[in-house]
Length: 205
Image (cartoon, rainbow, N blue to C red; front, side):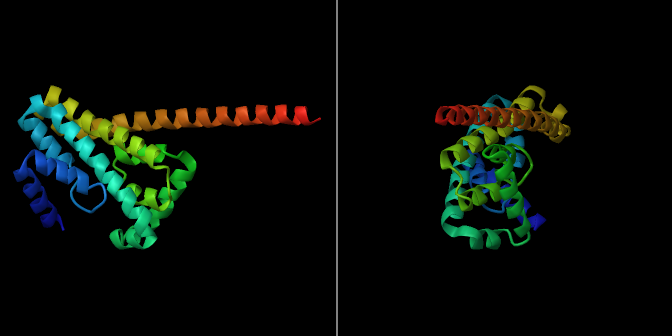
């Protein structure tokens, strides 16, 4: 499997920018190498085009995410089980995260190392609001790809071996921030509902 992934990565790399776009798009709903490897190589080769490469990755990946959503919506659980034969249990994890964090769950998967493709297809199966899904995907994928490109644009080869640590550190900070925002927003909504319920009760007396 590793050799196949290497060959696929070489094939995408030989195509240049179109290969980066195809890699980013298809990886959002199918088991192929993530575009990060190709993005890193292209950023290091031409740092002046790093932001352009990040944009290509973001747009193509978001489109691929939408395709994954459609596959899930019309293919259902059988398609998920076929594509992810060794990860059937991941669906329950995704459903639990949706119930807990809503569209933030998509953002987490789009930005973090959590398999994004699992979330795109599961989103369609769970009938998540498509607009919220797409926005979360676009922002999450964009944040990840732009972070990689900006770091490499400024620091180049010197930071390459530490790139995963940089992404991990930023990921932890962003995830914690999003969870705090979500919890506070959720608490605020509950307080508002209680106030409205109290006003309605008072009006009915």
